Image (cartoon, rainbow, N blue to C red; front, side):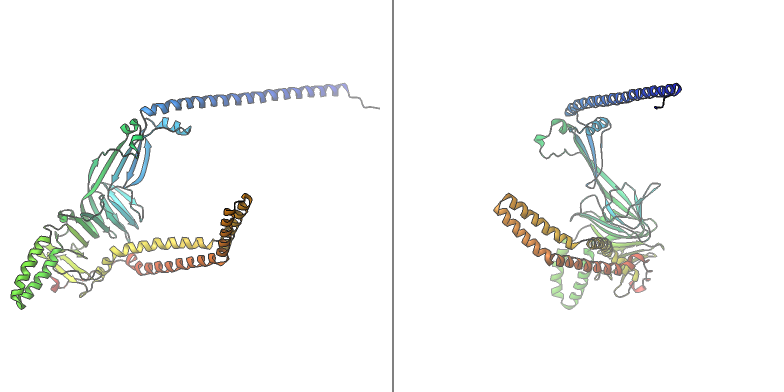
Length: 491
């Protein structure tokens, strides 16, 4: 006998069925409503996109008449910034977003100023600001401003300081600031607006030619002022007195460099005096010829300086590695440097001028600071070279030579297979030759070459390590104290 459902249960089930149907109906409506809203949103988005694209076409046409201006800034030939004129920025952004190409006028802004490199910690003093400089063995892209001070911390150097004008036979600058030194720079600027250059001017629209510009600013070092510390100074300004370029802190005695030819004159005069005693007739003839020759070849001003200068804390000045004679209080040095590692030491102290031959009277401080101009670049180059070699050796460790050899053979076999499928006899022969060559190479030659390359790297590594070991004390330790000049060294 079948079980009968009670009226109460039947009523309850019917109620549940109706509620379920209602819920399903509502959910369908919700789904339909959601789909409809998504569809409407997508439609609005497409409509907006269509309007934007229509706007882009109009902007492109507008830019054909009045192109946007891109400001492109370069410092010493390196790009440092690019931006569009704010008046065009939003339109340019819209065109880029929609992948539209458009005409652009460019305003090139180039500045050529003093360049320098930094080893260790250094800074620029600009008014009340002290701007730290990043250590780098490439030229800094920061521009010096008039009256800026470049300074160094302990065990640090600013080197390769050069003028904004390219070095040549008539004009050159090369300066090193030793640890805990400061130098002020006086900068001149000259700005010109040369016509923009185009690869093929005939193909450039008139609107671009009209709106493109070039601004070139050339900075030159007008003067340098030594404030404190040790400096290597190498300056050349043909037919100009470089003493006018060089200023010294007012706490120190005034002196001037003389033309390097003065040293030769002294040597020649001594030789003539000796000759006059031994052969009076011959010396007279020789003397006239030499004097005539010197007058023609000698510069009338000191247009070139090369020396290391230290402004000492006791108020004295020490000059070494000088290719010039030095004039002080009406007296002039005469000794010529014969050995760059043991150079002449010139001391200005208590109103007296001394010149000491350090090959006769050694001075360890002079020996140390005289090595810096050449030793610094060697030391930095060795450190950078060592890093590079270590990176290459690390790559060698991760190299699977056998797998590389197998890949070469597999590539050649694949080439031969493809050539046979094509049926090209010439291509088949070429593939066979390649397979044969790669197989021989992979069988041992590749390992030999890899091993030889690694051995060369290790040899170079040892050279760099030796140079660093030899030079490190020069750059890590304090310079020793000066030996006092002796009375017999007084000029």
